[in-house]
Amino acid sequence: MRLLILCVLFVSVKAGWLEKPVAPLVINHGYPFEVHEVETEDGYILTLHRIPHGKNSSEVGRPVLLQHGILCSSACWLVSEPDKGLGFILADSGYDVWMPNSRGNTYSRRHRSLNPDKEPDATKFWDFSFHEMGYYDLPACIDHILGQTRHKNLHYVGHSQGTAIFFVLTSMRPEYNDKVVHMSALAPVAFLDHTRGTVRALTYLVHELQALAEMMNLHEFLADHWYIHVLERILCRAHSFTEKICDNVLFVIAGYDSQELNVTLIPIILDYTPAGTSIKQLEHFAQIARSGDKFQQFDYGTTGNLERYHSRDPPEYDLSKISTPVMLHYARNDWLSGVKDVMKLNSKIQNSDSRVVPFYFFNHLDFMWARDVKILLYNDVIKIMGKY
Image 1 (cartoon, rainbow, N blue to C red):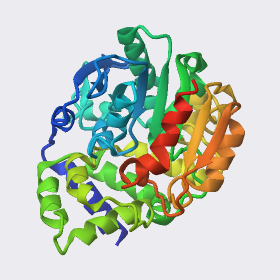
Image 2: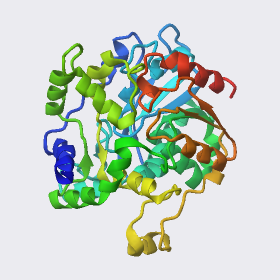
Image 3: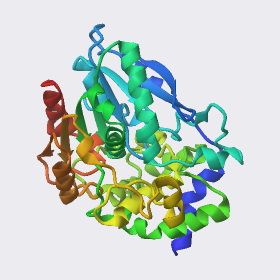
Image 4: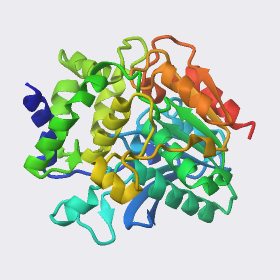
């Protein structure tokens, strides 16, 4: 049974890759849209999407970096209508909105010398986890944004993995604390000791995952492929009798919430997600979940750790080096970002505070796509950002 589950999860890597354009999501609503590219120190070419100002203003404000979570892309902030999508809301609130795409997702599958789809390059291309996203991707994006806008610092808003890579950056390259005036962490992820549901169960399949990946010579997980979208359109179209199947897949991943899920968004969401990531990325998160109470670098085994870190165990990220003011926005029904884990994270960061979303059934995906997300969350986020 375990092998069958993993084969189903892997099947999407065996077909052709698809890139659905983000521009129509923005332009069709009357907003300006730009595409930028930046190359990281280790050669990955990342795509950044930008909304420089709001629909009814031409004034370019202070930059804000809006960072997606795992298996998502910049599109996750734009699939909702302008009164609910955070990319639009921030632009209309006077911010210059920059939405990077982390290495390996739909819009950042390029490298200056490596081909992600062809061996032996593919093995090297996909050899990354969220550590490299924090250490290489974020500083490249931040420096590009500040260079383009000529600002000394920017705001940062991240969701889930988008918070984890910020904690990696500011703990390992603390000079970047001065380049971020304030960080809004939506469903923050660092410690995963209290993760619940299917994701917790999947952490115990990591060894089978590794073995199957090696056997099939696979490196990429849940990429964006044409036939996946055909299936989604058939099963998940609005008002179809199978629509609830799609609803329940989301519930299984992120926590059950029939009250706030915007079901009309499901077909659009599934046009842009999953956006793919590396298998090593999943292994790293599974490692964190199994470690109990450690937010640490990737575990290469005793021999590998001695070679890379000069210690038997991977080092923990030193969260005490984070000096950027941080607000941790969390929810009680979030199966991935547990309340106790958020409180522990809050105690480790020197200049942080926490706010609970005032609706008990708010879950991990609601931070992006809830029907009332602006009232329940985004208004507070923008109010707090305005103080910095």
